[in-house]
Image (cartoon, rainbow, N blue to C red):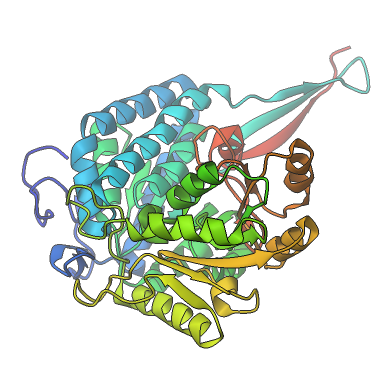
Length: 492
């Protein structure tokens, strides 16, 4: 993000819009570009290089060439480069947040928080790079030593989503780099500019050519086919829908790649009669309406026990009605646009279907066409049945469907009645219930009296069809390594 001009840079004069391969910015082999727009207005923000299979292979070539020297570099030196990258991100945080709001639409305060969150992963894995420990196991004979070595897996393909376009980049490539892997990054075509800016700062930090490569494309299947089929790519990390994750998993089977898949969710949010309602309301609003509900760990079903149901809904409705909707760069805005018109149409169809099936709109319940084609009002519905599509599909929008329940056993059964198991939340002041539900809920992330749970020190990932593997924490570093058993003999 230096001030000098580059061919094809984004509006704002600081972000390159080409591919980054082998330490250089270059155009796509075809010379083609695709447009990136502002979800709030539809205005074109930039035109970026449109990679194809040839470009993807060039990126893998570069990563493969760079990997031998990179893996041999002492972990302390890799850590130092990550620290430089961290400091550069920190010094450009405001510009990165403005760029994120422009291409993704979320409120500026949320964009700032995302940049800080993203940079937390760089700092964490700069520290963890020095701690990729092996093991010494007691040997079965006195003339042997049994060692377990932890080695980098190899070239990593990282495919990141549009909803957190900065944080998902660093959550994948920071541990990969820390472990000694070279990376080919493919960001979402809807939000590539944050990734381009972060990679430009990595270039400025001094990572060797080929260690970090980036391909932007409007043809994800063509680029993905190269990344999944090439045997030199030894790991694929993907965040996105379960349907796409399953296809990538099948495509990777031919070369038996390691996988990290962070996929869809259908998070329950359970409020018991004995809950602290103020705390539960604070948690729900912060969790559900972040990024206009476009988060994989956002509460998708709110289960409220009958004793507090009406009171909770009344207070929730007042809070939701007070949320300000508008462009992310406006002061006081809490809800921005949805990412595409298709996303808005999906939310609208789910709400309309629930209403047709007997649900009742308490607040909102309509598209805000006066603001544009991608806006939907913050919404609360009651009378939602667990069989309705709104309670089964991941809405990815600012909609709270409330389901009434009677007993703890019923709540647990409803919560687990889904093929997904990413996150679950519950509020109660019963200490014994906390431990019962922590065990009973089938989810990789559980919040007990807390609904803002993400941090770089904790493992992030799900059960069932919500994915494979964990990101963040020391476990996130291990995902980019292989274990090697070394038996030393003849020592007696």
